[in-house]
Image (cartoon, rainbow, N blue to C red; front, top):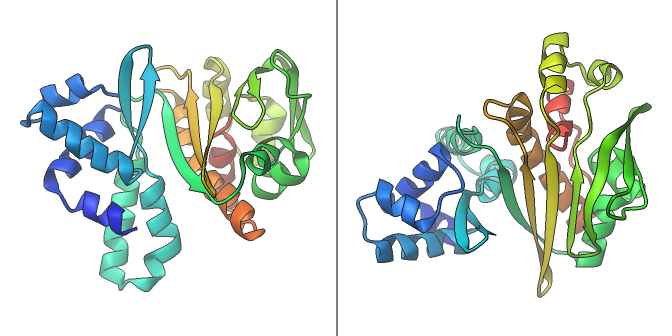
Amino acid sequence: MDHVFKALADASRRRLLDRLNLRNGQSLRDLCAEVDMTRQAVSKHLAVLEEANLVTVRWQGRQKLHYLNVEPINAIAERWMSQYDRLRAQALTDLKEALEHPPMDATAFVYTTYVKTTPEQLWHALTEPSFTRRYWGVTFETDWRAGSPMVWEQDGVRIADPSQVVLESQPYRRLSYAWHVVTPEFAESVGLSEQTRAELAAEQLSTVTFEIEPLGEMVKLTVVHDGFEAGSTMREMVGEGWPHLLSALKTLLETGEALPDIPAEQHAASHDTAT
């Protein structure tokens, strides 16, 4: 993680992360307009942040957009906090929370992690019940073909709706599907209040996309959860739940062991990361 700490050590790079934390998904031109740096300097700093996995890029047509990626901070907080004294641990916690807190005007949730596995194993972990049940507590009934319906099941609760379909399926490369509806049965099973359930039910369904890219012995996994309305309750849940869920997936694939279950009051948020 030396490259992460080195990237964070520079005040200019921290300032760029601050700008992305306020408004995610900015182009180079957008960022140059908000900081007192030359285009060349901003470009160099972004390259360092991208190399450290603190920034993820996505192309929208010909435009290159930059997204804050909290995975390295999440890894520091979850794996190494115990090695530091209390004050340093608290500093890391504060930084993690600041970076993970979704900006008011942010829509898409973008998260990139690197897993020591193969594209085939990662694909199976995302689609096969024997895997998804272990790190997510969820199984899917579908043939994983584009246009096919999906039935979600968790703790005996089945969620079926015509809007729940596979949107794109390129085995070992890319998978995209509509999130599930929030039924009264599901809300009750995960402890959502009626007010929260009503808010979620009133929102348009979001979409989650998994992009898989082999890199030697590693696989780069980018998760994009988007389609949210401004002020979305689901978007807030996504920011809280996906980091833990993806850490559990990474741990399972690399060690064969799942992370400990999260507290019940956080379970709804982690599940609705994909909802």
